[in-house]
Length: 437
Image (cartoon, rainbow, N blue to C red; front, side, top):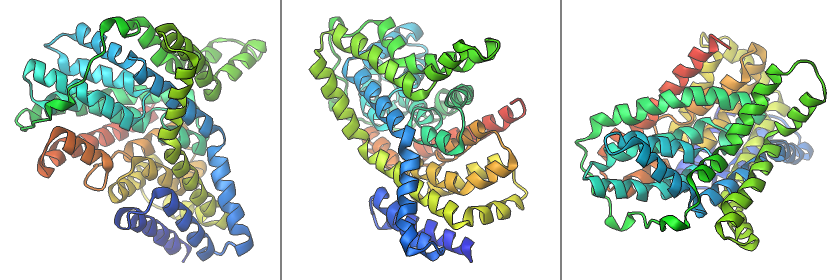
């Protein structure tokens, strides 16, 4: 009976978000309360359960997501993103222009949230399309594949960062494993698959061609690259150095402190405030205004993530999570595949990759603990599943369709298939890594 109530709760969530067009934050709250009461949590305890779920989920995560948003916004506003794109184009040249855009999307996608990266990069794609007279989808898909993969696989993006917290994984190891999986996934879904799409007719609006800033107003190439990638560099260093240093001395304690994702991002913000802000001519008031705008951009994402934690807490407090774990253990499916599958089904039903990943986490968490699966790989498996087959209920689908001026059929053939390839390649990479870690 309890399992039927959980299924009802998930279907209610799907109905409210997809058909009812209810905001995901409100939908999660309603479903958490209704499901909790149906599962037998007392009236006097249900609200405390919701508060605890939201608080536990957003604890450290709120700092990580907010600081990540601030860094990404400054990278965009300072012109560092444009500088990185220019450098990549010069390195790869016209012959390998797809690879240049893919590499640019990957580098910029690490600090930038997906929607910001999309809106920022699409005009650059169209500039290349009109300059070199090349098919827009063929040229643009590799860059957008990069943005999608970094959004679904790599912290400090909201969903992967939240999954790291829920599964008690290591942010540094998840990032290292994620990079190993993300790069081949992007290559397959981007430059390789897009070769089959040269025949798709697309007439993007010329008004969307990027208004480039003058060269002299852009930050330097080394400054742009190093500042944008500083969180990644620091996470890698603080993850690998403890494996090299012997013993448990003061050095390791300092590394543990510096290796905390919140500290790393705070250091990165401090560096970026000077290198991409003050050093490029902005005053501190302007930089702080950019940071304030960044927080406004991700406020709803934070609320949705917090509310998803409420639903997870309902599952845990009611004891239904243990029942789910017992049932799932009887399925002849590897837990990593199961996590991917649950996230993929919810993604296809709901459209939102973030909601799909977080909802799947609440369901798969008890099984992951009992089966001793590597939590870092489970983060990536669920993240890959959350990207599966974006279609008409996903905002990203319509962004791509309208910006590239495509038919529904061609959008499904290009965007939706690309997302499916990314999800399948991600799962394949996770299962391959599972043999070695």
